Figure 1 (tube, helix red, strand yellow):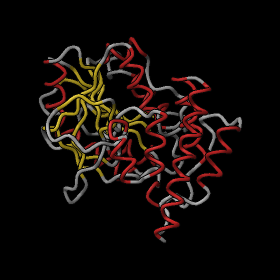
Figure 2 (spheres, one colour):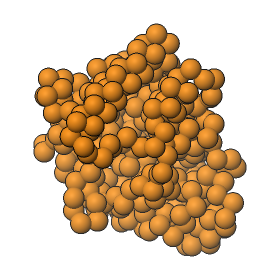
Figure 3 (spheres, one colour):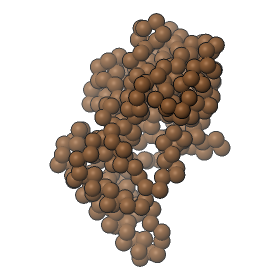
Figure 4 (tube, one colour):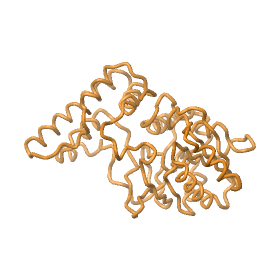
Amino acid sequence: MSSVLCVILNWRTPEMTLKAAQSAIAAMKGIDGAITIVDNDSQDGSFEAMTRAAADWPRVRVLQAGRNGGYGAGNNHGIRAGLPDGSKPDYVYVLNSDAFPEPDAIRHLVSYLDEHPDVGFAGSHIHGPEGEPHTTAFRFPTITSEFEGAARTGPISRLLKHAIVAPPLPTVTTRVDWFAGASVLMRQSMLDQIGLFDERFFLYFEETDLFLRAARAGWTAVYVVESRVMHIGSVSTGMKNWGRVPSYWFASRRHYFEKNHGRFYALAATLAHVAGLGVHGMRVLVQRKKPHTPPYFLRDLVKHEWGTRRPQEN
């Protein structure tokens, strides 16, 4: 039987993280493995509270990362620790601290990877508290997608529909480029080959980078609609309440393009994004609508493209 290590990363949301762990315990029933909660150096009593709460839970342990190195670093800490006996699992299951798998959600993912040895990732259908589907299956970003995504204009999107990063959500189990890391099962042998999350990303684009590295090594990713997970979203990051896009998003974006495509491509992608923003700006001006671009976005985008900030800065 395949073994699974479930890793849940906590950042100052101990009560919700424990609820996610309880859901994972139910979903791990009958599956060999363990659950590891990693506290990303919250320094708010989270680690102590979760350690006490999980003391009597079967197959659950709580680890302290010792630093807040971001999403990738925190998950890597749990993955490197392996199973409680020090061995490696067959699969690593990354679950967000605000995500709650249905009782059979993990089993569907495990079954899919067991039956398809060429697939490296299996991801769940993610939905909100009211059942509303979350768009979590994506294409890899390109110069063309940067222009389309910034322009947000019907005729352009229809013309460039092949490049849209977030196409319509699949309704059947299907191969995709990458998916958000709220509920992802990863093959350990693949991680041994390509490496773990790049810790130079503090937050955002680290999943995209991991999936791209896997794709270049011949691994595929499949969105498994039978696996369903309820996700609240943006609890730890606070993204829903952003008044301004944080610097680490821009730094991670730049690092992703430069690392995977080179400096010239990264610059071209930013120029395409700026051009798309120009199209969007003209449209909202003519139509007298409110722009969708966050405050200072263009200025911050340009500053980070020509600046020297590292991805982990915030």
